[in-house]
Image (cartoon, rainbow, N blue to C red; front, side, top):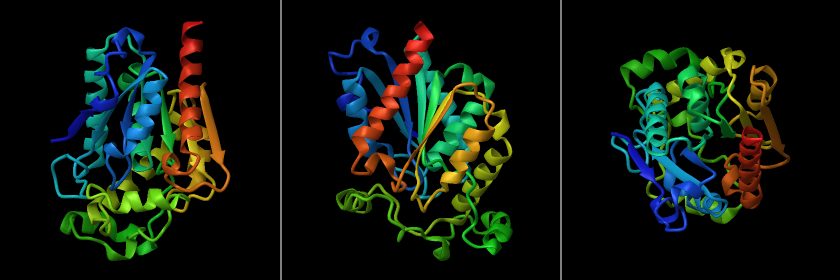
Length: 280
């Protein structure tokens, strides 16, 4: 069971957010090993600009069911993202909706938006540090992952733990992340790793079939996901409305970098531009 959250403390339930006043709704899909509650500050900034916010924890993450850090299939997460979007659209008829995904969540959002039915429901998607062009940590991992993911899917692969790679230049953000009990800090589980390689290679082969409007943001110094993957998506996608912003020297968790408010503002500005073009 996926935990679907309306970020209630700072979202739709506040009296000043009558549904009619909302400019649009952003749905947050978090990255691997984290959870949606980490995006509370981003949600508040969105709310202050009259955007409603929803989020969901994927299976094996945050408040959702399943073994912590274990994802039997990212296609299930893609399908849940689509269902969540449909439910929000039916609860808020006529309200423009955007999907936001970070890292592996970015890959999930992109795969969901390749589906023409889901794309129809969206104004656009925003991806930070998406997991595109992901390479196995060692060639042998790529060769054995399909087999091992069937034989020992929950096994923790000690050789592939990226825990030592800094994801933010803000020391306080790193402490907050790695002391959060809902953040999974163990070695990656084999099936989870295989699923990331699988969705990444599927997307890389299908960039040309991307037609949804998108804004992709990536730090040039990201050591977890490859900024070249974002560049390839931008170059190859068939979308008429596409935008890429590379932040020089920034690391992986863009919304937890010292400049997080400016980055959030770049996202808000992009959505606002989409909405004003839409209505003009």
